[in-house]
Amino acid sequence: MFAGEGRIYWARPGEPPRPVCPDVTRAYEVSAGPRGSVLITEVRNPKGYVARLWFPDTGIHLPINRGHLGISPNWRPGRIFYSEPARHFFNDSGTRSWPEDDWLAVPQVRPRGEGYRLGPG
Image (cartoon, rainbow, N blue to C red; front, side):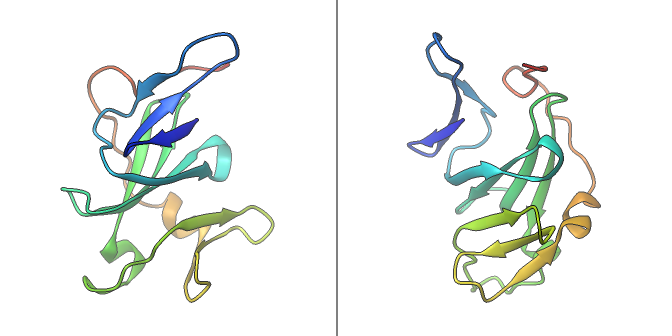
């Protein structure tokens, strides 16, 4: 999994990369999240998402906006990372952290269309 030119791509050995999550057009960072999810940090998302947790096996994602993070519209969180031992998310400057359970409590979204559910493997 990687981000390139704002989009997300999925690659398996011996296969060419294919685009996934077609509504993500301004990805800043992609990294591992909790419980088999992928953490996608976004910039200037039209829906106001700062990040989302995407579960490739089911296609569900949890959109995280500024209200979920308790941050003002003018503050930019930068990259967001997940720490499994701490069970928290952190911004890259280390000035903020958010408990895993708070993010996992965000209402689920199941987008329509292709490119969201990859299935196991």
